[in-house]
Every structure is written in C-alpha cells, then in structure tokens.
Length: 203
Length: 203
DNA sequence: TAACTTTTTGACCAATTGGTAAAGCTACGA
DNA sequence: TCGTAGCTTTACCAATTGGTCAAAAAGTTA
Image (cartoon, rainbow over all chains, first blue to last red; front, top):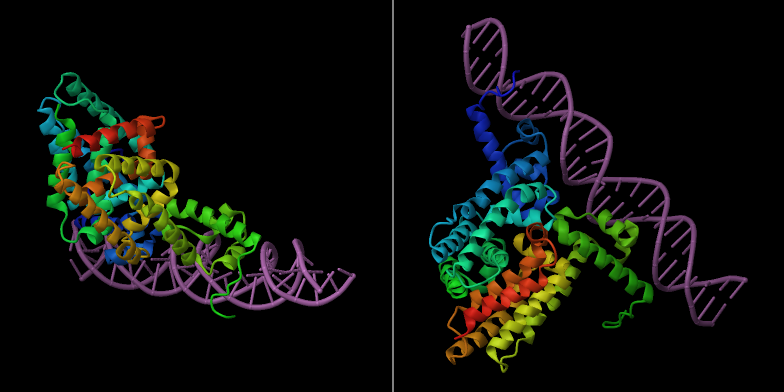
C-alpha cells in the first residue's frame, strides 16, 4: 500500500474505537495503567476482549492513544490565553476555563494526574516537547505583563502551578470535596478562585 | 489467649514489618492498589513473598495499615493550627508546614492522592469520621477570625482546599514541576505561596 | 445472489497473580 | 546440649492476566 493512503475508517470502526476509548478512560482514570485489565475495558465497552484487540494492538496502545488525545485538550485553554488581551482578565478567564474543565472532564483530569504521579512513563516526551515550550512562552508573557506594571510581581511559574492545582483539585479530589462540602462546589469555587487570584495579581 | 494480652512484637518483627511497610509505600504510591503486586513489595523489601504474608494477612491489610498510619500524619498540621493564635500567622504557618510535608513525605502524599482519585474505597470511613469533624471545626475557627475582622472574608472551605492543593501539588506533580522548572522548587514555592495567601487574607 | 471484505467470536496459551502448606532453619533459654 | 518458639523458604495452586488464532458471522459490492 502506498504511503499516506490509509483508507478512512468505516462507520463501525469509528463507533467501536470511540466506544473502547471511552470505556478505557473510565477504567484507566480510576485504576491507572497497571491496575486496569483488558477484561474491565471490554466489559465497560460492551465488546469482547479479542474484539478490543482487533481495534487496538494492546493495552498500551489504548493508553497511549488516550494520553495523546488528552494532551491537546489539556493545553488548549493555555494556548487561548492572549498576550495582547488585558492581563488580569486573561488570567482570570484562564482560571475559569480550567475550573470548567475540572467539572466537565474529570476523568481526563484524573488520567493525567495518575500518569504524572507514576512519573509520566508514557508522557515525558510530550511534556518536554509539547508542554514545556508553551509553558515557557506563557510564563514570558506573564513576566512581560508584570514588567509593564500591569500585574503584581509574582513568580509566573508558581502562578501557573497554583492555577493548575487549585482548579484540578475539584476533579481529582472530588470524593474528598464531596465528603467535606456536600452539594456542588463549582459556583462557590469559581467565586473563591477569582477572589484568590484577583487579590494576588492586582498591582 | 486472654484479651488485650498480645505480646509485644520482637525486634525482628519490628524491623521486618517496617521494612515491608516502607517497601509497600514505595510501590503503592506509584502504582495504586490494583497495580501493585506482592512480588514487587517483596522484592523492594528484600524478603520472600511468603515471608511478607507471615507478617501481613494479605495485600489489603498492608494497604489498610499504610492508610491508617497516614491519616494521623496527614491531619497533624491541621490539628496544630491554634484557634487562639494570630490568624494570619497561624494560616501561613499551616501553609508552610503542608509544603514541608510535600517535600519530606512525597510518597505519603501520592498514596493519599491515589486513594482519593479511586473514590477512597478504603478510606471513606476515615474521611467521614476523622477528617470531616476536624475540617468543620477548623473552618469554624477561620470563620470566627473573619467575623472578628482579623481576616479578609473568604469561604473557609475553599481556602483550606486551596492550601491543600497548592502544597500537595509539589509532591504529586513533582515530575511535571521538575520538567518545567528544573532544580528544587521548594524555596521559591514557599515564597510564592506565602505571598498568595497573605494577599488573599490580609483584611 | 455470489464473492468478497470486514467484524466478531470461542477456544486456547503462557505468564503472572494472590495466596497456602509444610518442611527447614535459627535464636535462645533451660 | 537440647527443645522449642519464632522465622524463612521451597514447592505448589487456582484464578486472572495480556494476548493469539482460526473459524464463524455479518456486511458490502458486483
């Protein structure tokens, strides 16, 4: 077969691949890579194990596929942060976008957390090649804003870390949050985080 | 054997039990409960698998023992927060104690994170019975401080969440932090977090 | 409908898993 | 020195694991 001529996937292929990936996300995000079995994925997807292996060459390929997909989604809000916008507005909008993601994509957040906790064995290259340059670029933007006197002086790197950690906390530690708060923390969390970062960053 | 007469553990028992628990902490904190095997623990501890099972009745008992030990260590800094001290000082001291724990006990932090991410299947009772009352008590203290005008008005619950998340981030996401920062983040993180919470809480 | 391709399945496999049983070893007091 | 309680190991098991394979079934197309 000539290069670049992979025929487009059939309807069945599309459906089953996404069925599998969705099921795998459920399981991997809770039990991690080693703790997840193909049988669990198969049952969650409503397919037989050999059928799973018809679409993916193995457990690892499923995991890697999820991680690759995740990377884009994950970086997107940071990409959107506009160097030409109003600094405080841009950062607060970023905080809120990340908080929305914690609410809307908790499985993805946990999958990512699990992978990093493990030492990112399958994601280190992505972090180096994908995240690092973007992180440096955006930190430089924030530093510029600070130098221009538009933000209070803070370490941009730790600022970004604290935005990540405070927002993702509501996805990754959802169980704990629910035990301690009850009800939906989202609205009160948004209000609190806006307050937190406004106070920090207002010059 | 009469009740309450368990004879005190021998020197060998002490040594091997703690050898096992230390090894298990290494493995569980990275791979989670399901992802960890007794063989991994045995090898890390330098003991044979049946020997492990001479000291613990099974994988689950090792995990539960670690979780129980952890609970005390984990709550300790919060317990120490003194309702009669200076509000801002107390809270900033708490932040720094938590940050020190993230540096000194990263395995414990990851073990806890993994358990919560999984939905706390073996810790829910502990959260309800141990953490919740303490959390409520300390939130009430913070609220009192706010009512007395000694702190800026914030939601105490989210304040505590943000202290937990920002500090534990440096343990749980250590791999990511190292990729993005290089070097030891501890000192600059301390400086940043003190700034963050000072700004938020100063009336 | 016949010929073909894609999808699905049941049977199977070697390796790994948590765990057991019993024999053997070791430290130590009498 | 011997006995014995405590510790360790060897050999083993049944269940589960990730994965294979050939054949059956289900679509597709001529």
